[in-house]
Image 1 (cartoon, rainbow, N blue to C red):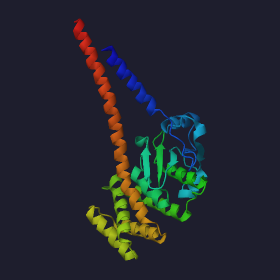
Image 2: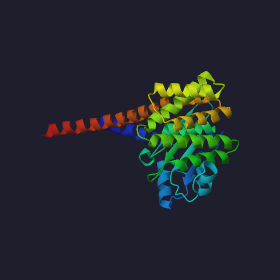
Image 3: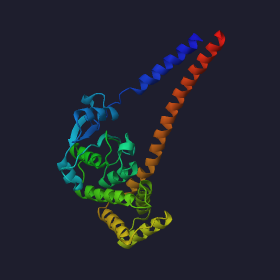
Image 4: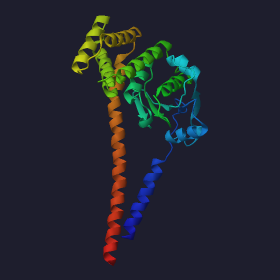
Length: 293
């Protein structure tokens, strides 16, 4: 019995040690970039570091997103308080875009899929993006921070036209999500399905864009006002004019649910192992009590 206890204790320690191993730095792309909202206090910044698993600041590049950046990238108010932060780790081509909201309870407007759609429109692919905030916020400064991180990286500068369209997309998505009968997931699904269909059909005219949008609205049973429908058409017409490679976007969007499911399965798996260890010790203690009772 003692040997069994020691075996489980030893294996538990090994699992814990393995989970704390630091990720190897990808020398091809450089250090992961961590972008902090300007309004964070030093205490809050330390909290964000823990949330984003920044154990050694020498192994990441740290930058701050400011009110000027908010104006530059998404035409926001330079006096806004910016708290949401992000960690960007670039990956090899084909690995896909993974969005991980570490504090989903504190990001009130922008979902994983909304971040993904906006970033893919802006030209950001093949990366792991972790988002966190110590207080409840909309999540916009994290998006601005991601743009800034790419612009400060070597050879990764983003197209200003594409980031502007990506901003329009996110604004439209969050506006639609606020309206009665439109939840965030439904809006994300609509945008994703439209992009996938554009990749399939490669529309050559605005009329074909309209047809795709109308078909998806019908299929998803979404009813929009004439004004919102037109905003949607204008948005995707701008995307078409930018010659965005929708085949690449489609591939990354199709991988997104798989990545999310993988993370869920991994979390459940870890929890299952730890629960089994806990159950073992509980049963062991109960059996020992029975011997002496």
